[in-house]
Length: 311
Image (cartoon, rainbow, N blue to C red; front, side):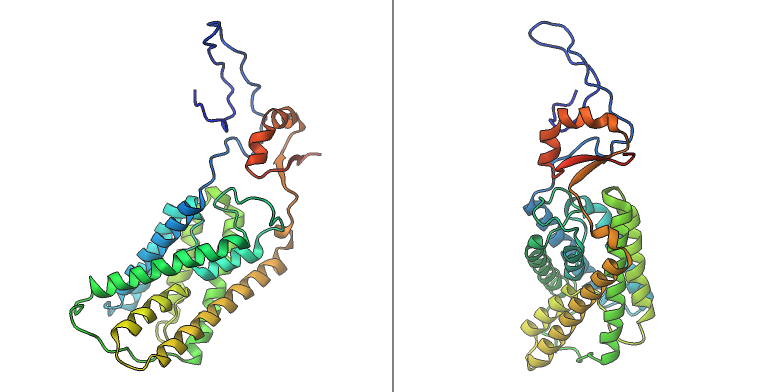
């Protein structure tokens, strides 16, 4: 039998003192939504997952820069995002995007004093750490893809043309808002067990947006991508840095605005999602005894009390 203090056991255990079996714990009431409370991921584990995920995304983007087929590049970006969310989502939530992290922090239910206990809960205090890890991963990914995998990595490259246009900014604003809103809603519907659905949704949004905008301008949907590319350009190029900096600031502002729009739409369309009473919900009042027996474990996991859906 597992020795985890968070496992509610329904099997008897052998006493080492008397050699007799101790009474079994009462059977778990049907409908209890939290059978086992796992140790929540630590902050350093979550930041490592975010940084590694963004590193792989930027490496993929850098490799796709040499890809003449825009459809292949679009599908590649969507597939890698889908896989990363499925892989790292249970650790960090699978944001890999400062705009998504900002959206989650703005739509978090109003319990800022409650601890962050799972990868699905995200508070505003976590935002700076997530953004820092994501930007560091983006910088490393851009450097690796530029220096290690570029066909002409041993030759200094001039700065690329300045592809900033109002059309590109508006498309990025539109599709980034859609991406953040879809991730917010999918996370709410699927919860911590719906990584596959969440990955599918985010991957399809990224792929569809890249395909739709391929002939209208460069669309990023993620501020870490222009950040990583701009840092590499500033280091490698001997051209004036002002255009690169202006381009970076413009896309950063657009992605921030997109997160704000998505958060506002989420609050407007699903207002009940932002109400929290700090309770663990059960479908039967018979789980009151179980709550009393394991009150400490549940409260350490962030639940203040138990409420009953049939009351």
